Picture 1: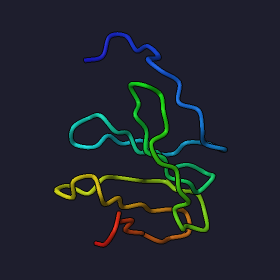
Picture 2: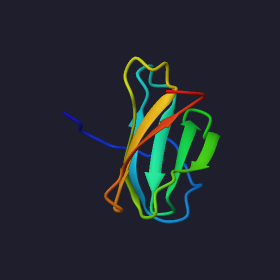
Picture 3: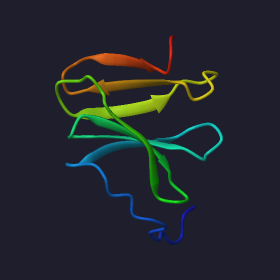
Picture 4: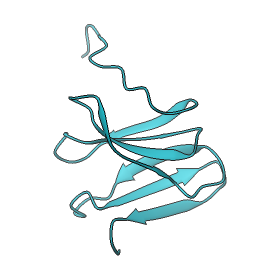
Length: 92
């Protein structure tokens, strides 16, 4: 049970509402998606953006998750445009 929540670090790079955040399996990278249709990968402990790219969606990103067993090279996103996209580093 959570007794008290505190702000650890403010991560501010998106333009618009952030709709999703999710950690990789190791917990060292955070992926976020927002109304600006961008996906950002964060070194959340340092507060730095590791990678920022357009999701390819034509509307707000509502979910972004690292695919298990992909060595953090594959992210799945879904958005208000009704599409689900598979984003891969190099090839899938």
